[in-house]
Length: 275
Image 1: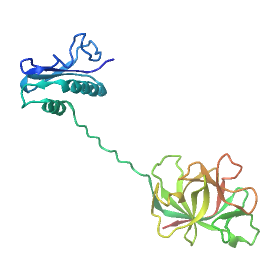
Image 2: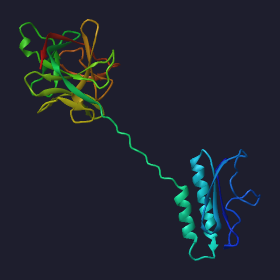
Image 3: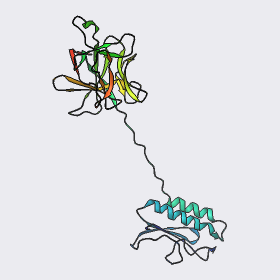
């Protein structure tokens, strides 16, 4: 096993009991096997004839192992002089061999979404032309096929647009979907073991939303494909999309793409407003 070598030699005329070296090249030494390649050496002259020789190697853990072995051997050293004892020798070695290393903690930037000055007002329908309406007395939306003359039941949405922290040519547009003229927002929240879609009451502005705060479940990635097909994927729970069932009067819910629900929507009566 390759390792570093640390030799500590004590002058025989100054010490009554000592090993000739903490490490030596003799067969009786129990030092760890070291490569025969010529090492880089350095010496520290110490008081009372004590010399510290160190061979440097790339593995720092082996440095520590060899230092510990050296210190254990020095426990048996009994110098004649009372002014330079075992404690002083150990302190001297530790001061010169152990190097302090400072590790600076890297700052972690939390993604943040900043509201833009554009809001899109519109009605939302699924691919079967069912309109999203508010369920009376319930914190949910329903998908309903409305007859002519029932447009008053259609929910008008305000889609607030946000700047994404990661932009690219295929990046989706982060949005918050609110019911116009109210403080109710669509939110994807964890209920039990899976995400669900609810209407969440928000008081105050949402000019900036950070990932991990209490309002990050309001954000959805809007992606438009084809002529007018839109999907809304939860930012907080990637892979979960706003969806409808095939039947009428079923709740609008979250689902994954491989489910039997439908995730494509069209935006009708669109009006872009500059805030």
